[in-house]
Amino acid sequence: MKKLYFSLITAVVFCSTAHAQTVIDITDADLVGGQTYNWTKNNIYSLEGTVYVEDGATLNIEAGTVVKFLPNPSGVDPSALIICRGAKIFATGTAAEPIIFTADADDLSDATDLGPTDNALWGGIAILGKSFTSKNGNSEVNVEGIPTSEPRGIYGMPAGQNVDNDNSGVMRYCSIRHGGSALTSGSELNGLTLAAVGSGTTLEYIDVYANSDDGIEFFGGTVNLKYASVSFCEDDSYDWDEAYKGKGQFWFSIQRDDVADNGWECDGSTPDNSAPFSNPTVYNATHIGSGAGAAAGNATGWLLRAGTQGLICNSIVAEMKNKALEVQDRPSNTTTDAYSQLVAGSLVLKNNLFSNCGSNTNIDMTSSGIIRSTATSGLGGEDSTCLALINHLNTNTNLIQNPSFVNISRTQNGTLDPRPSISAAAYTTAMASLPNGDNFFSNVNYKGAFSAEASELWLHGWSTLAKNGHLSTIASLENINLDNFNASIYPNPATDFINISFFSNTNTNVFVMDATGRNIFTSLNNASGKNNFNLDTKKLSAGIYFLQINDGKNSNTKKFIIE
Image 1 (cartoon, rainbow, N blue to C red):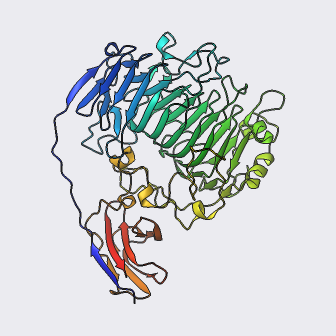
Image 2 (cartoon, rainbow, N blue to C red):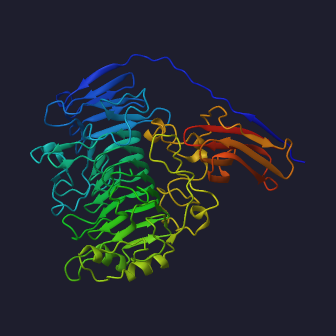
């Protein structure tokens, strides 16, 4: 006989003694080329104006360091940090001690003083490398957002050199918040700009939150990016252009419901449609759009255009206001567009999921389809019915199926949990194989950026979503509130089932998880009042389990044991 016990997990408050930190003002004149600078967590670094880490210089930033940026100190330019071509940054945070780049106004002791709509409070971070860019025939060019009169804004391959493996350093567990102000009129900075950055650079666990322009944008280059989160940017979440050829895995993005553009904007080259083209490889991305009925434009989850090539696999586009994707198709004999790359087999979408994009339920370009046709926007095209794209999506096992995220929220209410259900499409549909012999990619058994296991939700602890009250405490099973629902589990001991009962004044979500955080039972949107239902335990292994009840404001977790 299996025996069932339960106990209330009480709240535990961790207290720490605050230590005064010295504020060190940094201007552009403080950093020169060829020198090494060490920024440490016992100080707060306050940057005034655009600060360049010049050629030959190295900037080391200790885990746990906070770097703040003044909004507009000179009356002309906002503050920003530029890692110049030939310089290096080593910003190596940890999950316990991330490195935070944020606005001067951000009170880090107050999780809700700034939120998703607070942006353009400073510029952003740009890394300029020596790798390839297709812009202007691969000549050295000035990066977007920096005045063309500034020679330190140059990126691209020096004449006669091939440095695709160029090394600009390391950024790991770095959180970039509330940026996107323009350094030049009409040219805002992305949260993180990667201009001709080479594959010798390491980018892992990068977080961009509430940027007024794009979250992360690649201008050419070969740099790889793993474990990235872009949330609540007013423009696109991810953007590539100028023949970007890197690799990516575990990219997450979520958009606001009031202002948002495309999820991804994927361009092949600048000028448009001229070889060579972007050709990245991305696996396991999750994009969550603005949601049905949103005020935001939020036209497409993936906009593939300007001749982009590439391979996108095992990824999820969900909750777009309108369409899931567009593959740009222009009239024949004028340009090489993304459509022609798709037909030629140079642009491939495999084993991806599309879910709840508008009210669309079909893989076609009709009013109920997930495809936005270029022809309907007045650009013409060779395939006005998108038949080639439809056949491509079907042949390559792209599906309209729901990954059953635990919960989607765009506010600071502690309920966002973008993990898929282990019993839904992210796990139960066919997977695309990883590239042979490529050690960059991790072999996982699910689609999208996250496992169903709570212990593998890599946003927890360090990202702005976790720090600013977006991420659900269910994801970690660490922050447990008192019993708000008079919940009970019966019988005790249990034999073949348990009965779960509780009372709530509002709609609630109920989850039962094993000790690893894997969902074994979910009941969403339970009506207010008394709720009562049974859970079959016959197939459950002996061990520790958790019942979680969440109404968006209050959370109750109870631990129980099946012997």
